[in-house]
Length: 303
Image (cartoon, rainbow, N blue to C red; front, side, top):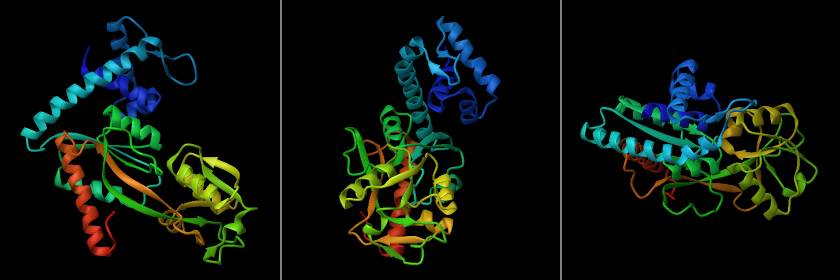
């Protein structure tokens, strides 16, 4: 049994299929399938049920999952030790992010980090808060931007930085409310809404805010992608609450809500006060230093 085979097995589990796993591992799908088949032959059992439309774990696959995670974590720890000695000439760091992150320009920051440490491979995963939190706890991610919506993070996770994001109402350009600039909650009682699928970080925050305002929303459409949500609002199917930069980048009217503090909290979290992975520690230092530079340039108060 090889570490590479276990990594390919975990990629299929994480990505939900062989095609997406091969893309994430940057290899041909046929090579990844062969690697997993070889692992199954060595273990003497099928790890995935391939008969349905989705690839799902068999009982044998579920039994292997915690062991694979532990073995990969051990191998990663060994690589981290070597990378530390090598002065980050090589290394790997995995970071997760919510789709609607706006408090940090993550592509710009990762590009700057790559220029400083070109030998470090960066893996980025965008997903829901619960999935990212579990991946962080399991060691599949080193760092993650989360929107915990006033919930306590699980034991063992630490917050390295905190931001507050303003939420605004976006509408189609020709919407009757579009020119107002601000809106009363009472004006939204009959409005159709577009929202994220239940359980995502932004949906949870908006649902909590609406409940606090006594606003019962009529959801006409729910989605899983931020780009699709914006497109649907622009097409006039409904209105939506999003962080202000998302609406502004889409060129849609952004209306402030006449209520106190319509926003959400975003955090950069990791396992423990300092990552044991040297590459993750370097990335954390870079990201928090970027936040300090932004605080100094804008004059905002750090959270």
